[in-house]
Image (cartoon, rainbow, N blue to C red):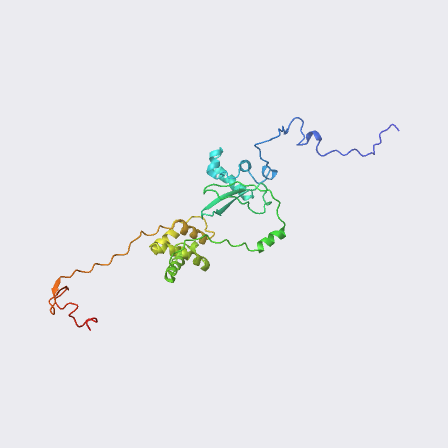
Length: 305
């Protein structure tokens, strides 16, 4: 009775002792000292802070961008002036963020025809529905925007893809005072040849008919057709022209030249004053270019007959 049973199984030992667990060391490891923030803070998710494919520099720049307000500049030059890293390392970090979906760049056309680049920052890639609408900003400014909306169901996404988006109306163009068919045909000929200067300026029939009114207004102001083509097709932006007709409509309205100066109609030439002649019939003086008979003595006039 007082002898230990040697056949009793011993207790299973854990594979790692509690005191030797890598996250439960005695005296070592991380200790958090938290102080609650009440202002000037930003919430950073582990999607970014512990991303396995991002370098430490990319994570740090991502945290910095997410802490900036909407409308702040986040281009490479501005970040290089604000941070200690150079432009090459910052550019590489931005490419890392763009590759995993935290960062994306969008080309947006403003209402005045200018094209700007906006930078959008997603704190949870893959959880956005549509880009947030922001007001127009001057060229050269970018926006760091965050969105954490849940993704819409697949059936809603497919239905939205099948439904064509409504086509926006083209901006208004100047109207000529004279809408003669010859003037409008000359305007259409100018628009039809623009794609020879730049293939991006290939227009549809509906767009050409809308823009022809503005081109006719230019031609009506004594602007040569070659000058109109240069004004429309010269100094084009390097970015892709998403809607060339809207770009040309803006140029036609914004760069409309002034009307030609007023030229009064030429006055009729004064009639020459003939010298006096003596009538061969009644010897009465009258004015005429050559000697002969006066009006009363001439028989070839209707009054005399």
